Amino acid sequence: MKTLLNTGIFFLFFGGYVEGQNVTTPAGLENGYWIDTLENSGTYGKVFDKGTYVIIPVNTYPIIRKSNSNSFFEVKYINSSAIIFYSKIVNDSFAVKDGTWNRFDSLGNLIGAISWEKGIILSSRDHDLHGNPVYFDTSDYISNCYTSYQYIDNRLFKKKQNSLTENISINYYYPLDKLAISNAEPNFESDFLRRPIDTFKIILFAKDSIAIIGIKDSSHNFKFLDKKKNPISYPFAISKGSKVEVYALFKPSPSSLRSSETFTLVTNELDNKEYPIYATTLGYHLNYKTVEKVSNFSLSISKDKYLIIPRMGTVTVTSVTFPSGAVKYYHISEFTKISLSEFVPGKYYISTSSCNAAGSQTMILRK
Image (cartoon, rainbow, N blue to C red):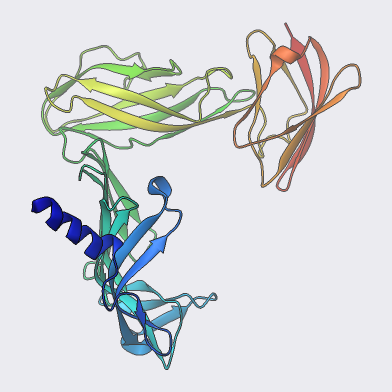
């Protein structure tokens, strides 16, 4: 009986037709209960949003501006502003979403929801197929604050607060844990020819006494230093209520470079003892800033192993002229490693062109 009941509910609310579903007015405005289909929605592919449309006058809220594409208004709402999306205006009215809209994957699993107040988003949430939170946000139009929460492995990783009207934001990493980290999403950049080492300062705040007993770094592209720039000695104790500075020193080789890295602080806690830090890492021999400035450089085939050139615009092409006069062309992607194993020692000419930058260099290759 329970199985039959559940099956009936599934067809009624997900797969089957509901009387009054996807109804439009004679003028073509959505009204009442609807199922909207999104064909390409990230991880889940096709998804279905289900909720209610209501029709309201265009002047329901004071209009600040209208988009050039006639798809949204920015309106005044309480102490802040908000965006209202619409598909068409008929007789100075439009259809907007209202109440809770639930999102389902193609198998009928609930994977998220958005709460609306007559066209204005109040909050949204996403979770995995097991019901664990992935993301949640809420807009407080009284205090003019937007707050989002990002979860990784069912653990609150980041709380972010933004002003709804000003370009101001604050990030809080691991806000529910004993150890708070000033930035758990740092960026590192290595210019192999001019500045191969990059250093990033991280401030750690202990809500309770804690000790770091090690840092895991699978790539070995990092070194970790204390405030005096000496290698960290473990256990690295941090007393309750205190802040300490540590430094992550990034020194990759062209062969070990990745586009992203994770290094993990391991503590003496019994629960949640590991604090991953997710770094975005960039490295290059030439980029859009240096391709017009560098005239010559030298690399070792055995030590450097790769010539690394990132994309400098929508389309980037690099040509290499060999000592024999032969020319080879490379279409540069976001992160291109040109293997030096196909070259022999000698003098080569590099020419790179893109919509944003262009330049030529002499490259000397050694064994």
